[in-house]
Image (spheres, rainbow, N blue to C red):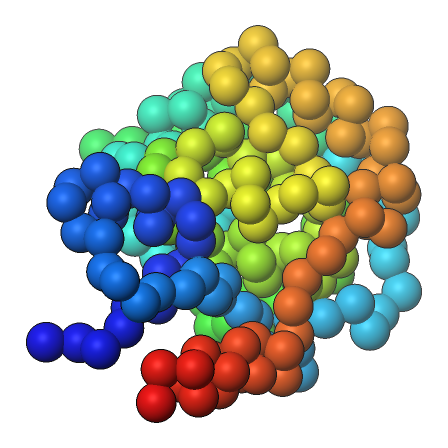
Length: 204
């Protein structure tokens, strides 16, 4: 019924193609964060411990909760603080990871100012709003090599494959935070809006 299709990522476009959906007219336009809320207009706080943050509105197991369970027992909490904000499965509990209920986007943006690294173990995500919000706030991301995470993060963070590579990449990211912050690239709302308009004009 549609004249054209907009995919959230190239990964999503390929997944739909594998499922037999390959429209003749399509494009890829990423999600974006509200730059009036998520931005880098603040002075970075120097933390005694490396502050890790993860957010998720969905309690779906594919959001990485079992992986965080491993981190809860293996991460050195004398060197790191790990905070999770959002909804999680009722059967999942952590001893060391600090869990907070869902918060407004404004409050999460405020918390980003005190965060060193954003962590995401989400599987097969089309276009993670959480990662985009972190990057827009100048926070490098450490994410599972799955879905569109590679497309979003580019040189503004690192990808991991398993628990061993997570700790390897975490240490490297921690040592080189300044480098990764400088290499974060995200499009602002005006740029994304223009992409939508250009595509609408193209198909009209």
